[in-house]
Amino acid sequence: MAATSHHTRRPLWLRMVGRDPREPHRAATPLELLFDLCFVVAVAQAAARLHHALSEAHAGTGVLGYAMVFFAIWWAWMNFTWFASAYDTDDVVYRLLILMQILGVLILAAGVPRAFEERDFGLVTLGYAVMRVALIALWVRAACEHPEGRRCALRYAIGISVVQVGWILRLTLPEQIGFFAFFVLVAAELAVPVFAERARQTTWHPHHIAERYGLFAIIVLGESILAATLAIQSGLDRGIATAALLSVAFSGAVIVFAMWWLYFSQPAHLLLSSNKTAFPWGYGHYFIFSSTAALGAGLSVAVDYDTHQAHIGAFAAGAAVAVPVAVFLASLWLVHVRPHRPGGLVNGAYLAGMALVLVTPFTPLPLPLPLIAVVMALLAVASQSPWPWRARQPRAVGGGPQAGASGG
Image 1 (cartoon, rainbow, N blue to C red):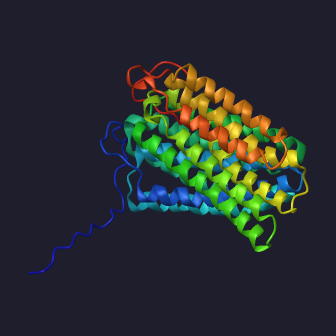
Image 2: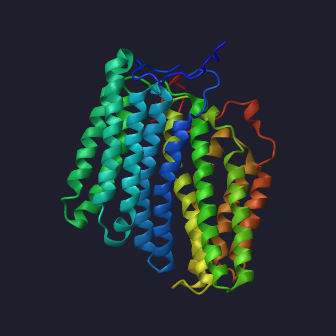
Image 3: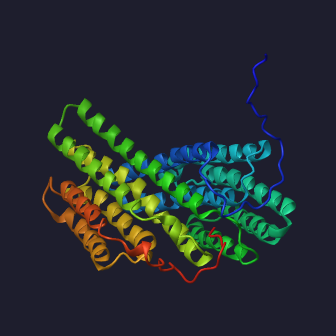
């Protein structure tokens, strides 16, 4: 008797309709995981350039360049994530358009060094354009195949197209004007989902979105660990400052583990009930993700200082770690913790933790990193105090509920 084949041919084209936001067992797909991993290549490039800028005492230009490049990475990732939650068909055409977005982020990653060193955003803009063209094609397809969501999909397609033309025209502007044009275009990008969702709310899945953000947070934390590990390995190969490197390694591991602990202390899907809650939550993750990746750069700077490779003082070396951790705590508390109404103890612990972390660079070496690790560990313990979210409705980040709404 011939063996029965369980192989299923991937369909070339399936009608793209809005998925059920109450669909059970909705989880991230292997394609989405591959998508995330490819985006982390760009994140790693941006963090590496930030590391070098901080070590060479170019903090102002380094942080600004990092923030600008990271926006392109994060925004392209976020737009696809919310689209896929509502319209994932996983047919051949869909997969090819996702592959096009992956190629775009790899082009963007290749342009990161030039953007940092020469303020040449040509290659970064090209990679971003490739990703956006693929996303526009997906929204046009959704408009053609899902009549109920046509107005919303067309608004997305038109809005993304108009802003993308703006990004290309920005390359022709003088540097000073182009700098201010960047922030105008960022505001326009952020406004597109708000404009589109007023026509009709897309059918994203709260559990799926929460999982996708959580997985990306884990990947970015892993990138920070990798960056610090490579820096420590380089120092050990030179055979210098072994005790200091071990202190950075241990403190960095505790900080990263505490950041993971704090991020996953709350069930995020409970906050994703409406546009008014999902928009601030989703947008606020720019600061959570960017500060998490910047931590890896900061730990690498600390290694450079201990191995006498950095051109900065002790305060700047401590601040390279303290500032990203403080930004992480502030953004996490605002969009991911406070809306759960955790009580005075947890709220007070977060506020005190931010302040203590920012004070650590004023302490003598080698205290800053171990002190940050202690603060983060204590905050993780405080976060385990009884949470009332099981008995009380989480407070909306930005307003009241609208069932089935989408955030961007």
